Structures are given as structure tokens and as C-alpha cells.
Length: 249
Image (tube, rainbow, N blue to C red):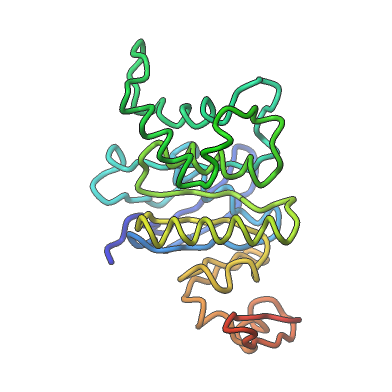
């Protein structure tokens, strides 16, 4: 695999505040499932903003394979930040993902609409295309936002707390969908969460944020009692149940 995104000694922060994260050096490989895990306020969303070029690094360099103009992201924000007042249908929401490819003044083409229908099907909600977004369940809304991100025909799918506020069944369904999309399409996935166990059996590598410290490594390397004790200062048991990795503290 080749490095798709490279952070080189990057320091991130906001005006009149101390830096949120300093000297970040890591890469995200093309086609991998990369997880970013940390508590609220640890800097996870700050990293996503830097990848999206919304936030300029205080110092350091973020490099994109082929140049940043050729890097196309599909972004799935936290559902709490989506305005549900507009009576848009799922199809109309997903069509918004095509805006980056539709030049100003041009109406959506048959191909744009074909892409929308294909992504609705990939997300498992073709039958909900005409349903209003605000009337959907949490899981259905999240699938709609995933389809919108995919409609951009992105190279990288950025997901910010995609299962936040969901029950266990909904969480498992969304994780299974993302895993299938990653395996079936080969798209690079960057998945942000505050729950370490959420990525124990899906991500290939993780970036862990804790008390200003950053650790990057393969899941198998990080999910050991010794490493979890070193990072989090807690005793943990790592085992297998039904072929799945389980972590208990």
C-alpha cells in the first residue's frame, strides 16, 4: 500500500489557544481502514478538519498523494450537526454529495442521478429514497449521510462518530455496513470514535489520543494488556469471543 495522506511534524490548534496537538507524524495508507480514537476534546475532529483543509496547521506539513487538488473526500459529520428543519428526502440529501462535481449553474445530469441511486442501494436504503430525512430513524439517517459521502466518488471516506447515540443493534449494523463498503469498494476509511472497542475488529491501524499522547500502530500491536496499561493506565483483559476480539477493563 502507498501513503495516501502523510502528517509530518504537524501542530494543530486554534487562535488564542494553546495547540491542541503537537508534532503529529503518521500516514494513512491507500485502501486501509484507519481509526482515530480518543475522548471528547482530545483532538480527533481537529485532525479531520486538517485533512479536509478547513484548518491550517500551525506548523508542519500534510501531504496528499497526487497533490491536494486531486484528493477527494467523502465526509460523514456527526448527526447532531445536521439541520433537520429542511423537508429534504433521502434522495435529495444524497444528491448534495454531487455538488462538488456539479459546476455552478449546471443542473444534475442523468449520470449524477444514476450515482445517487447506486449509493442509496449500497447504503441499503433504496426503498427510503423518497422518505424525508427528518422522519427517519437514527440508523437510516446515518446510512443516508454515508450514501451522500459516497456520491462524491471520494477516495477517502471520513467518518466522525458515526454510531454516536445509537443503540447496540444500530451500532453493529452501521459498523457492518462500513466494513462491507471498505471491503467491497477498496475505499480508504478514516473512522473517528471515542470508543476503543468499536474498532477492535474492523480497523487495521489506529491512532490513539490520550492525555496529549499519540500512539499509532496495528490493532494487534495496541490491543495487548501491557500496551493498554501503558497508554491508559488501566488493567485490561484482551480475549476472543466467537472469533471476535474483546477488551474488558
